[in-house]
Length: 335
Image (cartoon, rainbow, N blue to C red; front, side, top):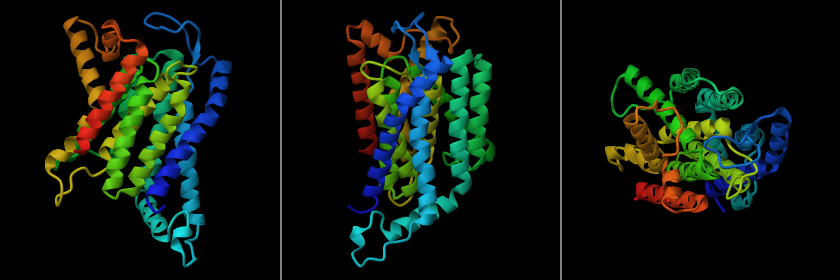
């Protein structure tokens, strides 16, 4: 197996295994400190459920990434004439070293942003932050990412515009993903489909570093899902849903979807297809709440998943249907 497929598969599998192995620890820790979701209004579970998913997912992403950075500077290229016997071929090591060195500042900001957004969600899980406090925290994290040079331009050569649209994108997607965390497996499954799609998009364009991060994210979510679907012994919590939204927003703008020689400008809209279910649900519930005269940030049961259940689907079937819709839209994005 040659680069880059072996590297991608190893990163995905490592993240999945680490998340699955560390989740019981984080679940027990959450119970001890009282980080649980108690039964109540608009909730279908009868017993307190630990909110440990975000901590496990971040562990599954962070540990392999830090280990990879250390290994890149310790591993020596294979000297054997049979280059196929090396786990990572010499040219692959060189490409990753180049990518890490060129994006060192961005990677640091990305990792700190992931930790910060998880802490913000964790604090919200513990104390139910007011909307202004949450939006302010999300704004600061998004601003830091934009300042690191990870920005949307949409072919507009204006710094203020690129900052504004990038911050708006992050805040919108973080909250849209948080809204989707309303049934077992729904948010994590949509995050898995989205991150996997972005990873393959980056891989197909030869953007090895971005692809590796995408496969780490999809692997971590894959390792979490068995604990959350169809029955849940643990929830993502706001910490986890914030993290998933942050990662999807990031992966949607890091790859170069538009390539002048091969792709039309409309290719920059591919992320809207890949994230179509999440964004359409957000638009739908905000519109319904606006018509009812309710604040858009006040939760209700008018999400796609709730409406499918009212139409006669079981919660599990409703989640599977939305996963399928997301997979179809992601496939269309490639076509």
